[in-house]
Image (cartoon, rainbow, N blue to C red; front, side, top):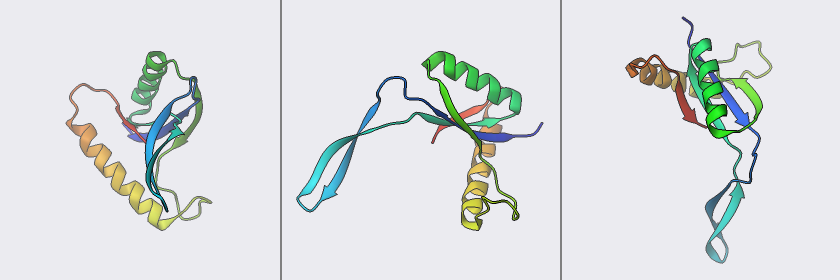
Amino acid sequence: MELLAQDFYFYNNGTLYSTIKKLSPDGWFSDIKKVEPSIRIFGTKEQINEALDAYIQMTGLNLDECYDFKVEEKDSFFYDLERNKIIEKKLKEYKKRYNKLSNNKALITTI
């Protein structure tokens, strides 16, 4: 049973916005920005597929892109030592949280 993590990015079927606060020379002001829905799923390949299908059915969103969230090999084009340290730390955290689950389901988090 190999545990994996994958990032899923969805098309914004409707227009979702979030309120943000920014600091300008004139002081703080509120603005809105477009939010692209995205999630990270951690579990076995079968659990990830099941969770993704359920999430798509529940939200009605359409999948845009999917990436593996993993530590890159040294000879990989995407290799970055600092990024790998962050990813490794996150994967350990996800595994700890996953092991606490008793429902035999994947762990889903927002990105």
